[in-house]
Amino acid sequence: MPASRTARTSRVSRGDLLRLRRLAQAIDGPREPDPAAAARRLLALQGQDFAAGCWALALRTTGSTLNDVLADLDAGRIIRSWPMRGTLHFVAPDDLRWMLSVTMDRMVASLGRRQEQLGLARADFERAAEVVSAALTGGGSISRADVMELWESAGIATTGQRGYHLIYFLAQTGLLCWGPVVRSGNGNPTQALVLLDEWAPPPPALEPDEALARFLLRYLSGHGPATVRDFVWWTKGTVAGAKTALGVLGDSVTTLDVDGVEYLVTTELVDGAAGAPATRAEKEAVHLLPAFDEYLLGYQDRAPILDDEHAELIVPGNNGVFQAIIVAGGRIVGTWRRDGRTVVPLPFAPLTPARQGRLERAATAYSRFAG
Image 1 (spheres, rainbow, N blue to C red):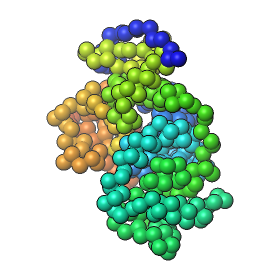
Image 2 (image 1 turned 90 degrees about the horizontal axis):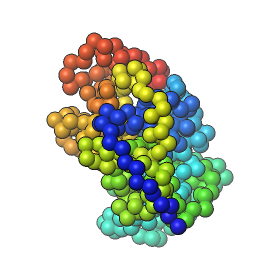
Image 3 (image 1 turned 90 degrees about the vertical axis):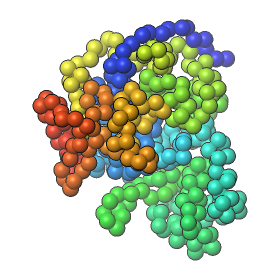
Image 4 (image 1 turned 135 degrees about the horizontal axis):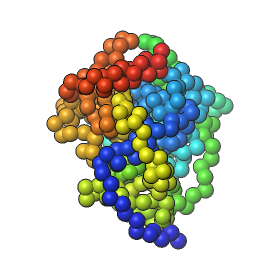
């Protein structure tokens, strides 16, 4: 039976909202000891841009480098797949299976039309699964290019987007995931495909409502405060499912009112923040966050941290490609890019000398990460 929820709503400022989010995401406050712990804390970090995702993991730790992130990937302490929204995310291996138990049916159901356009039928997926399983069973791994060649040699066409959709479907249905690191021809790290059965433990025995509740609680633990609509957008789920999860969670979730908007947050985070007022370092910090970072992409409503007038600079042409961002006072104040070994800041307006100094320290931290 769902646990009862006791009405508990507190009115807080937008500054409080953003501070709690930075604490939840380990951007401010205590960091995680390693990238694997950062992935577990946030449940999932968007990772279609591999290099950006690696920095997203490392910046939430006590000083991990790119090599530390790659080592966690090689060891299987972090894997990458499509747990929701049809978007690649970095996740802990013991989380992926139960996440898919919540999202898989809806995601697979949405693929039928595109698969039909590509001429992909059930027999194609079954044959592709048989071929790649035979190649990988026993601890094997295979690059994207090599799996395409493997399928082609078995008479399975991969032209156009067929090859991508074969990988995507087999990951969605729990056969494959992206695991160990391989070096591409230009020296940039990518990942190889492995069998999920060999890289992730069996899923916990959860009832559907329990899995939904775990999804919401873990999302709020690593992203809260957030609205119901944020959670529904993030998971590509339903409002009904979110309400069911809230009923199960009971008093472990608290409601905040920010300018008349209702946000959900874990009671643990609110109580912990109340006992530890914001430090000067938190209030004055400047962060260099990567492209597609969860601090921006973890919510449907981005108005709390981004002014409409700057949205075009974050996603030029509204093409879905998000730029790396400069965050000060919890809000986006510019973008940045890397030019060789140099961080090039592109603030929306000139920074104060104090913020400029903090930005330079953030650039030093990024350089240390990238080596």
